[in-house]
Amino acid sequence: MKRSTQLCSVLSFFLLACGCLNAQTGDNHGKDQQDFAIAVAKAHALTNPFGAGAAPFTVHATAVSSLALRGVGKGTYENQWVDAQHWQRIIRFPDFQQTEMRNDSGPSWYERSAELLPIRVMQVLRFVVIHLPGKKSVSSYAVSESAAVSDQGAPVTCYSATAAPRPDGFDRHYRWCFDSSSGLLASEDYPLDLHITYGNYIPFQGKQEFTKVHVTESGIPVLDLDIQYAPLDPHALSGLAPTAAMKQIGSASPGPNSEEVEHGTVEYRYSPPLPGGTPEGAANRPVIVQVYLGADNTLRDASLERAPTLAMGEAALQAAKKFTFTPRTVNGVAVPNRFYQSIWFQNGSTSGTTGSDNASAGSASSGSTLRDAGPARQNQQGIFRSDSPSFSFRYPGDFQLIPRGQLEADQHHTSDKPNAYGLDPHVACDTLLFRAQRLRPGERTPQVLSIIDLDPGCIFGMVDRNMLESVASNAINSVANHWQKVRTSKAQTFQLKGRAFAEASATGVAHGSIDEALNIVVVATKIREHVVGWMIIGPDNSLEETLAACLLQVGDEHESPLLPDSNGR
Picture 1 (cartoon, one colour):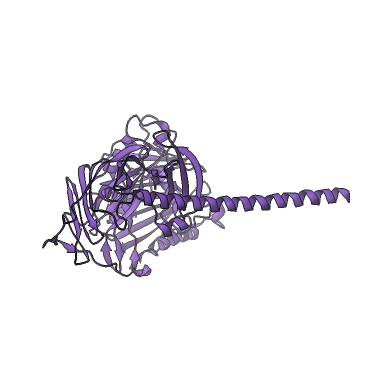
Picture 2 (cartoon, one colour):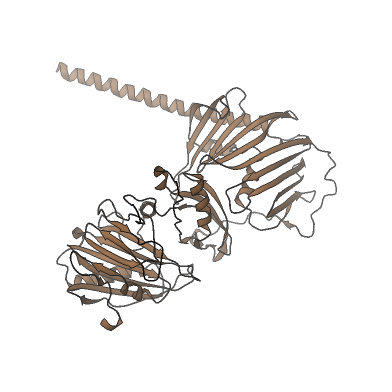
């Protein structure tokens, strides 16, 4: 009884301590939130030159930009500001110019050399003045406070926050640091690895204004701003009027019907060769870029957002030019689109490769490896080798291997929805062993060749002819269900050198965001108690010809075509 009482006392003390700890944690969180709101308000008050009653002024900035497809080079920003109803802002880069103004008429007017702003130009517009959340946004961030040291070695107080997860799979992390003595903004971290350092503050019209901004992505310099401030004659903009070439900035349009929004995505992803000299620890990591598409579905701009090395960042930006995309549409109308995209490298995101090996495509469960014969030639073939189930597979050498890391990332990002092959990602019976693609000249949609291993535990009963035909039919139907107006063939079984295969196909698949009509071929066979499926999807009629050129070898068997040629059917 005494021991029981002691135990109760210990538990009571433990629960009480936990309650106190939770209360203390809640108090700390509330204090962090309050401190952050005060720091933001103080920074705004100290640095905002556009407040009520501010004297007219002009701000001029010189911008040096790099690591972007557009907006690269030296540009200028100038803002002549009299009051909220009278101002003119001009920005010039070698390949882009824009003028905005407002006068007594009320609305704003603009003229620009291209309708889409390059990403770096948008950053200049944001960073040339202080960029901090407003009063409403401050309360929405759950922040944590910490002490740190600025880039100049001075003590700073930092506030970190993590945004809610987004469907694109890219995490959003924020951090703001303030000078511990003055309360001025010292630096800001922004997704994904964008770091902005504000420096060299000067007094101007009762405020403290920064005159230098240094922006890096993953530690790689991408933008530098040098800023100057000067008083402005209150009558400097008298008589300012829009030119005939200017357009009036319209009011915000109502939000689109969510059911009528097609978000658009990447249709063909090019994996560039890994730059020479890349450290081993960086080879298996992707570069993340921000891509900006026009309403015509062409790449207008791309900028570095995260890169293990400078060389990988440069290579990824060039690789983005080879991508093709499906458009984003709102209420049936194509519109510009901006999103993050991972770019993986050949010879990266893999392991165990030497010499002429192109990459390892094996999953952790199968121990499979893939080797490529080298540069694509008409008579060359790549070789995929699987340990479990044990077989080797030769495929046309002009197919480019999709790196394993990219496949795993795709599976992770789509783990809550059925994948394109109709297989349940939560069931460990759909191991994707291999995927490769090729994009032929003049096409936007690649041919995609995949191998999927169906674990024996997921195939019930004896795998006979009917079972094989069922696997092929179900696979083709599950894929076809993602599209419209599909003509599917009845699955058929054939024997080839003592091995049973089943084939099904779909032709003329129509999809509003794909230029070419797609065709699909699925072949299934049994290898060492596993059912293995080969699937090829592409926009032309040569898919069966491609599969007929693929060779399969199991154990000591001689290599045989995956599909018989036209004479053997």
